[in-house]
Amino acid sequence: MTSRSLQSKVLYIMNRRQTIPAHLRYTISDFNRQFPTDDACLEHLKEQRFSGGLVFCETCQGDRKLHRVKGRPVYACDECLTQFSPMAGTIFEHSSTSLRLWYYAMYLMASTRCGISAKQIQRETGVTYKTAWRMFRQIRSLLSETDMQLEGSAVEIDETYVGGKRKNKHGQRGMRGRDNDEKTPVFGMVERGGRVRVMAFVTPDVKAATLYPIIEEKVLPSSIVYSDEYSVYDRLATPANGYDHRRIKHAQKIYVMGDVHTQTIEGFWSLVKRGIGGVYHSVSRKYLQTYLNEYSFRYNRRDQGNLIFNAILKRVSERADLPLVSKDAGIPVVQ
Ligand SMILES: [Zn+2]
Image 1 (cartoon, rainbow, N blue to C red):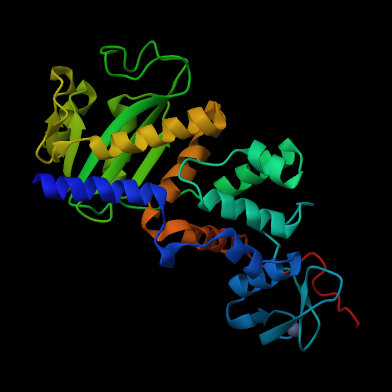
Image 2 (image 1 turned 45 degrees about the horizontal axis):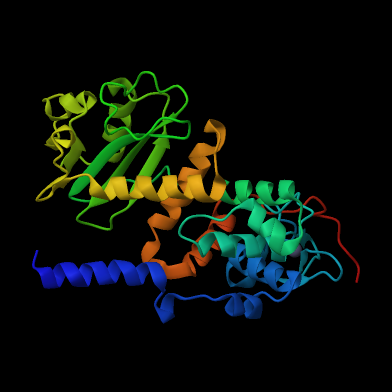
């Protein structure tokens, strides 16, 4: 790499950290303009869930338009007045927190690189810590991408430990898979040569029997797989597994040899660890996967600025349980 291209790369990375390009920016003023009230949020949710403002009404058997029912967060079929609740089946359904606050929490989550703490939203909005924490937990629950496949021509794989007191694995050779009880093992894969997307999983351990099925499921047989020299990866290139496997010798203090490196996944680990250490302070094993989902979700959309907010809003509808008929459905409301 020439020094000029290296310099432009460094500048690009620095700028990316500091500013979001104008067309990918969604400011707090934009948020306040688009979502001034609970009603505006409900109307948005309705549009997301009933595309084109139409819904198939089971009661009168047809595609119907909906109108808002006064004084209640529901809509009714124009023909037979059967009620439809846009919140039914969503993370908002049984919540007493205002819809606008939910939207604001999602906006905050979309607008940070390192995560947002429940404490911060507690301070800003006055909800209790418990409420704020639960909201974030619910939002995170929407962000998993377990169906995703890695399609890049190359994939970096790496395992790490999160939480606890042990220092990072370098310099702790021979300890992997053992003596790490305080820390939670995490396995990650990131594709290169394509869209550069990451997947990360909390695993019970870092043994071959645990990691290989994950690799097999997510990584194309034609991908080149890059890892460090940890012995569990020894069998990746055997005929049974059949990957084109290249390794970097971290023990010899070699970290990059041309394309052979695991810097991308290690960059992701440091983002997660900085975030969890700095913003969340600590995360229990039980919830670590949901934090990994949050970080992966943002990482995989980092070229979308904080329009990631739209992607999170979309997930609310995509992950809602069907059918959409509310508890009161079938009871016509006379207006
Ligand atoms: Zn109807």
